Image 1 (cartoon, rainbow, N blue to C red):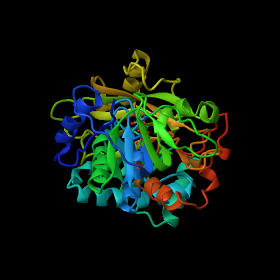
Image 2: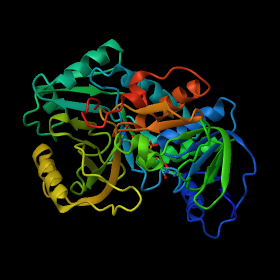
Image 3: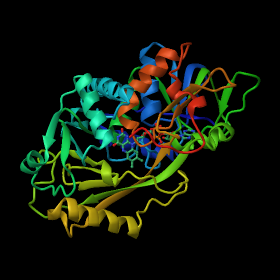
Length: 417
Ligand SMILES: Cc1cc2nc3c(=O)[nH]c(=O)nc-3n(C[C@H](O)[C@H](O)[C@H](O)COP(=O)(O)OP(=O)(O)OC[C@H]3O[C@@H](n4cnc5c(N)ncnc54)[C@H](O)[C@@H]3O)c2cc1C
């Protein structure tokens, strides 16, 4: 049995990528190609983290394999949703504001290189706050310190600018005009394609939990019995990481079910479309949303952590209870949407660390293995910065303690939003 090596660089356009992916991912009927060579680095997981790590490593001149069992930004992965918010505000967690700024530049470069500028929508992002909400107050200070373009809006300005919002208890807001959202799964596929165009090899395979001899890992085994060998191995497997490293991560990662709804505004009503509405977040109610893009629906997503989820087998169907809660919220905050139907939905998962800081660290016992994950519901935007960070450290170099395995607790206390 041979591992499938698939080149999708020759295909043009997103539709063609999807078409090229589909038959091979099923492991059936497609021609199989043996890799027959060692790599400098094997990256396991082609979500936003793994795809960007592979791209940056390949750009640095290394020979890279990017491996995924279901495909880049597949429907089970956390990177597989339609859209993801790109914002700079992070309370006083300045490192994430800096990474977000850096990442947006890299996203834009990639999208230009890939001729896919439509993937980033600069709609602006609106933080709606109540009173002296500490997260928003700290965010305002950080945006000022970092010179991030923003406006502080009082309630009258908020109502005047977006009369389709009924602010209720909201008293003020921050508007980031340069921020917006990314077309998520298209953008990840563009990243993986770019890595491949630069020389990385994409392998469609599921990797078995690694078995090291001593303090080094010699090779990966696929669940079909193939071997893939590399100098270093980076496991960027999102919610699957605890399965691959149960002893290390079984009680340090909290994989939660998250639901996303798309409401259909009334026919002819353009007030909820891109251009008329920014991305918005109402942290007081732990809910956020995106304007309707090309008629796909007005997105509303509760950010509160849901119950545990199995990323392989979970039926991704929203519940009646959450639907009712989201419709009630929509009718209250956006009165013209009262009675609007749910026209689409997604069920995804957050891979939460105890406080929301990412995990980017070497394996404590296997020196050539890295663990990268714990996106904690906010990781998408940072894919490019994570790729740079790992590339700069893979051959040595300190890791920031906030990303270390040692800093990950077994009890959740969310601090990064
Ligand atoms: C509903 C929702 C909304 C979100 N909103 C935002 C947002 O607005 N902004 C933002 O910045 N972030 C957001 N996030 C978070 C962000 O999407 C994630 O942090 C990010 O996608 C995580 O990417 P990842 O690469 O770590 O994991 P994934 O995307 O899950 O990728 C992991 C990959 O590893 C592969 N894999 C796993 N095990 C194996 C194996 N054994 N062998 C081979 N392959 C394997 C999987 O197939 C998968 O493709 C949101 C997340 C969700 C669920």
